[in-house]
Image (cartoon, rainbow, N blue to C red; front, side, top):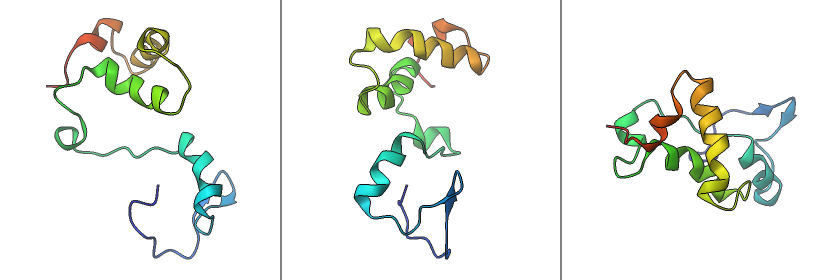
Length: 93
């Protein structure tokens, strides 16, 4: 994600060297790679619902064009981690 400069000589993603890619070459990979921060209090906005937080990357990358279009995918993702679809309307606190 290039939040920090890597001191490693090489970084591989799906068998391809990505540390030396130019920004334009790296940009398409941003859909495939995501940071998962371990501190939920620092990484989840308490003013946004869980559903919006999950839908935001879908909207940002143009995979869906509205929240209503993202709803089935958000519900499927919640189910895949053992949460009920109604958890989408809750806040992370």
